[in-house]
Length: 339
Image (cartoon, rainbow, N blue to C red; front, side):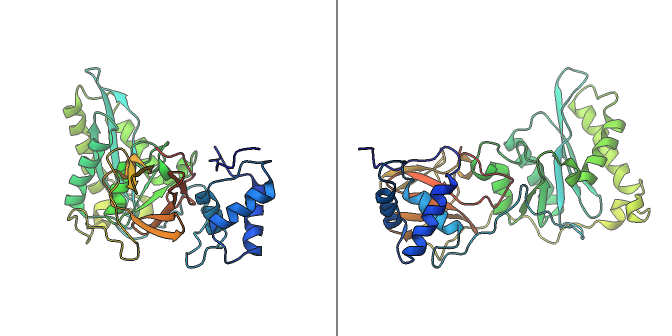
């Protein structure tokens, strides 16, 4: 006899198994994931390894077959992109590719623009793309200009984490905690951040040929460029006005992180430094991007727990398997392995 132990499918659940789960739920609408799984065990008779309870529950949830839980919207590759019609509705961010300074060190320009007004909010000559450095730069910017409604980026580090849960990085989690929506362009579609990319072309031509001797000299060039770009350079899209004539600081001040509360959940544990939740003396991998964050946990079936971060449902925990079965990705272009 083959093992009745549940299996985690490496990639996607076979469509035949998913259809069978949905059909069995239709026959037994009041049964939960555990009982549906037992039906699967009997029906498959050892021919195919049966998925874990959390996987079955995630399938039922995805098809809107779990009572009392909202069916998540399916997202296409990339997130929905907002129009950003008013100042601070949308900021666009990117690194303008690294280049070597006169002293041989590399410079990584971190740039931020306001989508509506074209106002160049920041161009920092950083020494790396590390998250901690980027967070420090954004914290200074938020204190000076306030908070936007959304930030649009590509899917690269440190704005996203290619190997993280839902591609979340510590930087994007911090943005979410501040009440900033994250937008990500589709991979290979830089035109979705076209205004920002066009600014980069001008920035490169006017400040890096030749490059500065060191980061201080290069930053001085960036500062001069920011002043001219915002206050002197007219833009056809702005009816020949300058960005500074259109832009004004955000009315949303930066006052640090608000507290997280989950009144509709059973408990609110902290994610450990190594990205795990500890429940009933068991450790479940969640994501290092969420380390130190408080999550909401709610039991939705026997031994099946819904895991939420802020208003986002992340997935289901099966305590027997000590795994998180992610739901559809609400943040980015693809569902990724957990970090």
